[in-house]
Length: 109
Image 1 (tube, rainbow, N blue to C red):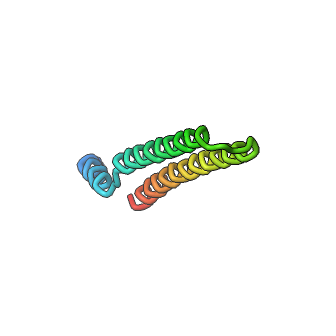
Image 2 (image 1 turned 180 degrees about the vertical axis):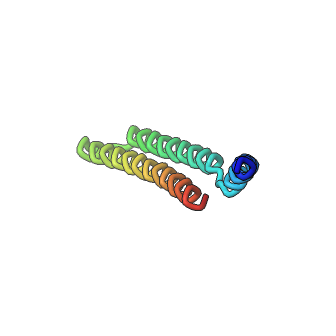
Image 3 (image 1 turned 120 degrees about the vertical axis):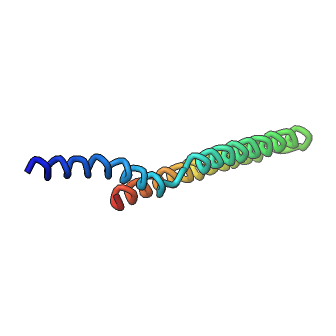
């Protein structure tokens, strides 16, 4: 009986590291994807900022009514808000995919 118990313990101890190593091989690394998303979002935000800055500069040279300027300012704010919302959704999608992948890996192993 003691030999059987020792045999089971030894088998468990030897198989446990192999199971953990096998589980790690199927993992997907989201780090590079997260970094690419972050740099893309920074580029988008900077591009929008430059575009809006140039628009404001053109307003100075043209003769516009105050109402038109206010309307254009509100449109710029809407554009910025929409970009932030879209970026937030992209980040949340990445997080959801990470959670889903982790959950699948738990179910497999």
